[in-house]
Figure: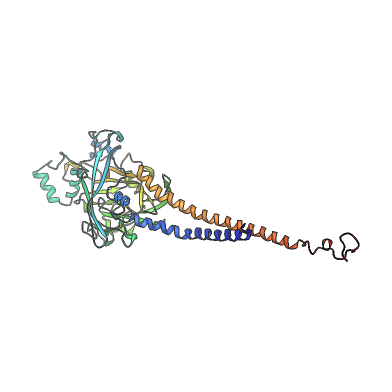
Length: 465
């Protein structure tokens, strides 16, 4: 027995309603499912094989590029003339990072030490490690400034031990970097509250440091600088603690973008990062300060007159650049940035650039300082860079771009199919109703006076008596 069109229309209508309902549910439930998977994957948990391995043994290729400021006129500098500098580099080292001594704690934190190894990459460098460059003698000039406030010691050295400052011998700026670690970090795993994942609970057992003059400047804020909590917005910032800088720093949102088809937010250093206390009062705790754009780190570097800044004094007071020749700062070459996937808090492209500077001047009684004019002298700058590529990038792209997109498309496909099905049911129903109406209006053969025989002459053919 054939199925009536009305029943088919009803069936299509029900199927359409269910399909639209399912698609509508996906609109609301889909993002929840995706977010739930993200939460499970970014938590620091050995059960999360992929993400835990990425956190423990960072698969991203990291490189440290070192640039020297070669001094072209060392003799003239001793006579008080302006230094002429020439950038030499990069000398590139491949950097391997691995976490060790990993210990999970009952308060939902995990402790570890991260070790660093460096291997020289001749094919990526401008020369060999044996190249000769001329830079100021940090031992002599640094010690001279340190002893300036100790006149009795200076007089003693000048009188009884003339020329005995350590002007020769071996000295390495990064001599202790290879096979070193960044200290004992204890961070939150994110269990129970994913907003805390990667945030530092303590560093070397400390909740705060004691290098600076205010409680705010001594705070250990943010993460260890490798990953951040998920679900970021343009209003989010990237706070992290840097053992090398002896302080917490914070990057700010600049713009959206893409890395290999993956959406990212770019974060950069604000102009206030190395501002002095006059230009930015919250930084008063990092003083004694000089011009904005340099950070005095002498308090955590054995009181040596060392400052850090952006390379070529980018974003710094123009006075600092005017004191030397050969600097040309640009954001593209000397600004630091982190491109981060906002949904997971995972950096996809990183470039951290910092410069090491030495405060130098003539110190009365120390002949090695000659007539050097007072200035902050650029010594070297380095860039730590890394980016996700290869299989890791493919997996990341599939799980965090393709699958969410498929789910998003599916919900609209279901809604579209449901609406088309409902439209088909409506059209079929209307046609069926039209057919019924037409049949109802058509005269029945037995009641048509032209064919029923009523009123006909009974004597004619077909008539009745």
